[in-house]
Image (tube, rainbow, N blue to C red; front, side, top):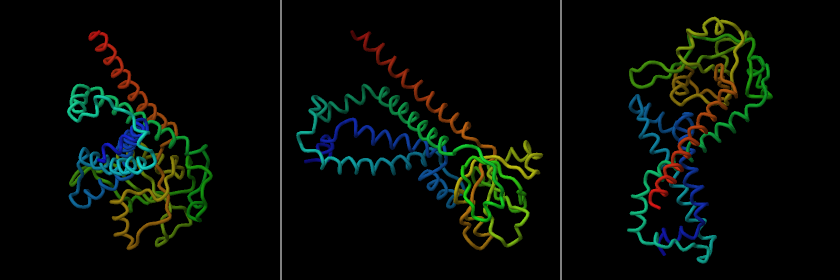
Length: 286
């Protein structure tokens, strides 16, 4: 029995969930610069000084599709041959090719819609996971205390601008983001840095008055420095920074939920367009 015949034992809905889930997750990772997408991008940055967005996205999708296809084959072992549904004329490879060719626009539109909706769901879950807003001090984090929420306003900190590390858009490109150590009044040179502030390069000028103060709002991420920044800090410090927090400056759960809304609205828009075109063309044929 061939792999394609075996995979047909698995219900179509389950196969679609695995494949479309891989697509949605790859879209989210590409937009959020996270997961395998981030790893592949930083690998290219370390080798070539820049990375190709489309190639990185395609490789990320491939890395996700391979486990999905393997999972489908493993799930097929749990379904007896009787679980397979008769695919009718689509059992013929030529018919399958013709089916895809004539409906490629609908299929791509549906995949895009589902991928955007999946990304919206991931962003929504992330926004809800931050918790309620709390106040904390940089000294608390330096002592190893864990804040009750990751949506915080940190007090009692000063930025070490002379030790900031910038992340460029490519070899010789402009700096897009800066990662600046944030320390308390008790911190001394040689002590490990437990908090880094992530902010856009343009924000250094826009919020220069607020940044000069000792109050910094945002959302916290654990050990989430980009690889290229972590490598530069390792070179500077002589050791790999660990046990730190990254404060995404001025980011709030509402901002992340807005991104979820944008992805969701885009997914619904493309889904409605595909459905309307399908219905209109069906009426014309009738």
